[in-house]
Amino acid sequence: MRRLFFASVVLVALTLALLTGCTDRAVQPAQDKLVVITTLFPQYDFVREIAGDRVDVRLLLPPGMEPHAYEPSPRDIVDIRGADLLIFTAHVMEPWVTRIVSTVAGSSLRVVESGAGVTFLADDHYDEEHDDDDDDDDRDHGHSHGEADPHIWLDPLNAVIMVDNIAKALSSADPDYAETYYARAEAYNIKLQQLHETIAAALAPLTNRTILYAGHFSFGYFAHRYGLHHISPYAGFAPDAEPTPQRIAELIQRVSESGSNTIFYAELVDPRVARVISEQTGAEMVLLHGIHNVSKDELNSGATYLELMKANLDRLVEGLRIK
Ligand SMILES: [Zn+2]
Image 1 (spheres, rainbow, N blue to C red):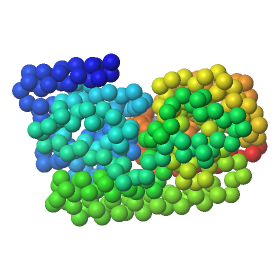
Image 2: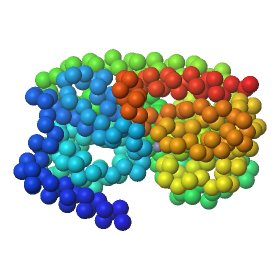
Image 3: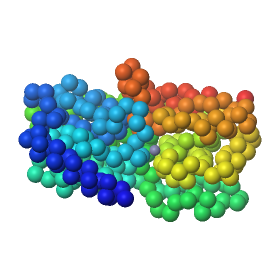
Image 4: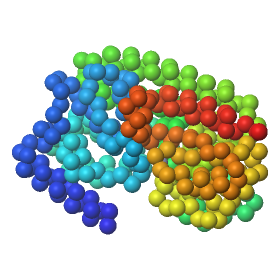
């Protein structure tokens, strides 16, 4: 069904391109600037940090859109075809990128997987590491083992790898500025390294190390890096199926027993599950931002990956504290 939809999207996009007579016209690049389209907010922010005003960077997802169910519109396809670079996370996060490659053949577009070289973790890894329930039953999770977790950017050391990949791609597309791109990337990577050290130092002394999260399972890499546990009632790595009442009941019990009186919730989706849990337990609802995308307000107020991660850290330290 999705494939059919996609085929028609491509057809419409190509028709639109023929009608306008020129695919490149849709993007209207600023003079001499590379047009860089990024899928998710982290890559968008990393390109801004590495390239500054040297490139025309655009965020493909409209602000506020939850990204897991995203499919490119005909207009998006036309824009992508007219860009110089498309920077995405990984095939497991944006599977549609694989499908558009044939439709952009013949254009000068370079497709860049910013997560190349990152060590991907799969759900069975988390199950072994995190599930300390006696009655653990993997069938409850509703997904097949071995599915890779796409949320690599929430580990700042993975972000370093993404920044390196982006700097390399920009330098290759715009060699005259290669030195600048590499220098800025290096400076930004020092900030990411400092962020990592700040997070590690702040979380190390905590005795309560379990993030009770009412959103989908997105903090796996973060939890893995900093030795935390992470419990979500959702079945997979996307908010595409509502959690079962049994999983919500289990989470309510965990919140009641936790001593921290906090339920974390995700950005950009209605926090219904967190609200139910909060009503049942009296727990405080606290945002833990998965930084897939940002809201319009966040974008307009100049939100950055570093700031969002630091805000997450502050909320975690307070939210995990035993009260
Ligand atoms: Zn996600």
